[in-house]
Image 1 (tube, rainbow, N blue to C red):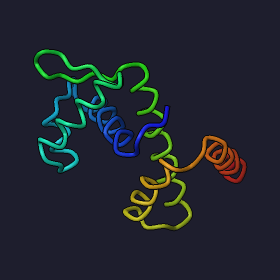
Image 2 (image 1 turned 180 degrees about the vertical axis):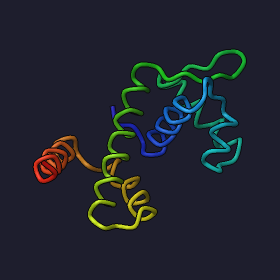
Image 3 (image 1 turned 60 degrees about the vertical axis):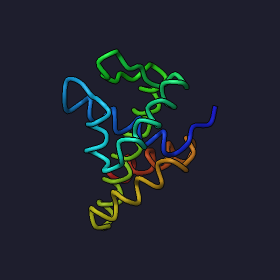
Image 4 (image 1 turned 90 degrees about the horizontal axis):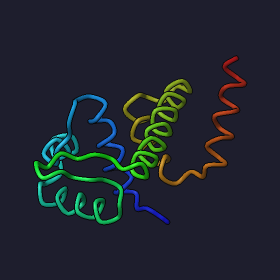
Length: 123
């Protein structure tokens, strides 16, 4: 099933926030991304309906196994690509922005090839 880039970004953000703090609510996502409360609310409803997150009665958000898998994949791609671009001499802020765009469109095959190449040249 194809997931939209915005959903991938929300899942990655939830993953990052869960690594920073013990619990995550929609307001944390609003504050992290700077989006409106209604926009985040709609996104959380869609993620819940598609089985990527659960939300308890108090509004605490948890990634489901499928949501966590996507979030971890996006996070790995983002951190690797940001670091790699920075190592190539790209300014850190530009590298982070570019990595955020690349992480959603690059195939698993190409990403794996880049990782293999980078590990060979850094050895």
